[in-house]
Image (cartoon, rainbow, N blue to C red; front, side, top):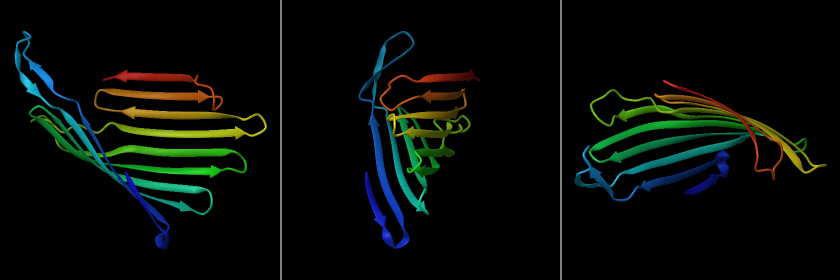
Length: 173
């Protein structure tokens, strides 16, 4: 990852490259006979720009090139993430909204139709109280793909607690 803040336009730019190599996978047929091997991999290149608006607002946009290679199957796509955050540190309030994976598959894995990207919407709000060194976080996420819709509501009551109350609703299509 690399980043740069351009003071003249009050914008921070960043780029990152994520690559996952799953190693050498043995390929077999339905009877378990070895047919050879292959090396699947995923790659994501991201370019981000973010800014601060007045004292408490922050917003940003990330553009992504995505590539997957699994044996003879290959797919590419482009997507964008858009986020906005509000921070009132004097009163201990934070809120954020992010929409992820807005985009399209450019090349599908085979001859089938192009698949939609798994859209993810996340909304969160938190309040901290300095007098008791604790905070409360409420987070709502919705994840939608071609085969699954999942909604999660999380309530976490303090920073040090590893436990959280989660309500998760999943619908398989």
